[in-house]
Length: 379
Image (cartoon, rainbow, N blue to C red; front, side):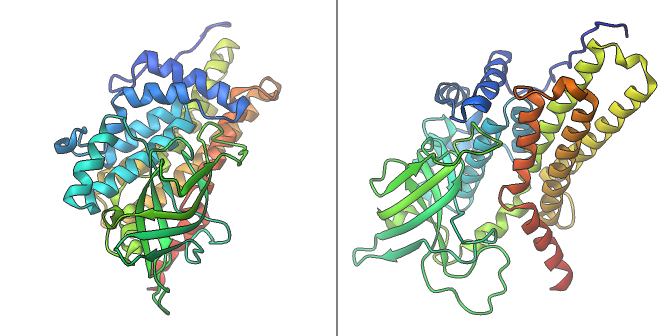
């Protein structure tokens, strides 16, 4: 391949994203990396695209996709806009939990709205000083005499804060029992669905993150936030059971990492083609090594989504660990290949590297993933 030849990657025939939306996603990723604010106009297009119904059962107006479909779509989104990919991932996760644990009335009311993009869902689990394992929650839920609940507390690192129409909130509804052996979550915790328009819920985009800058990751405050009995998701005090089921579901944040890694590789391949470097065997071989690492990450993400391993939850944890580490290493190697060409503030590779690092910090964090895997050897 000669000097000045530009290499372009073909769009997958299985692409779920239209070329027009793909272009808007890519352009928005570049803009939000500079501003650090979410692109509400782009999100309106995503809502209208029908993509948000991927994980909603067909009976409620969705596409009925399982973890394989979710992982594929999230990876594809992450290739062009990781911030939107993580917002979508959280929406799909909440959709799946409602489909699995919601009452008939709750599913009939919420799921069609999540399917057609009228509502966007987000998770609010983390909070200051609670730790990655969510075992020391300060946020509480107290039952009122009329059966309703009042929630109080503060949540941090909530993706989609101020954008979501409904939040899946994790709170302590009873004193945790002693010696329960939980690794993620604790006894006495309950999930509630809280509307974004609830007067007791306030979202704040005060976090200025280094990566995922368009993901609207911020704080959610609950102050005398009253919700009904019908807003409880799953059994009272048994949130840890739902959390454990999330791992077994096969949907994995490793898909976000795969998309980021692929985007960095495409950038390196394009750079090598335009500079005429593909004529050099050592460059081609470095690129092949990167492509092989990405395909390995993609394979374990696909295995997690297929849920065909003896222990699906472990595969999901491994997929997040391996793919997130692979993505960061791919980005670093691409940085070495680009040299001074990528050593400018506005270069896309810097955004990709920051986004790759962010995946490792998303819940469950990589350190917690390692602990969750290790406990299977000692129990």
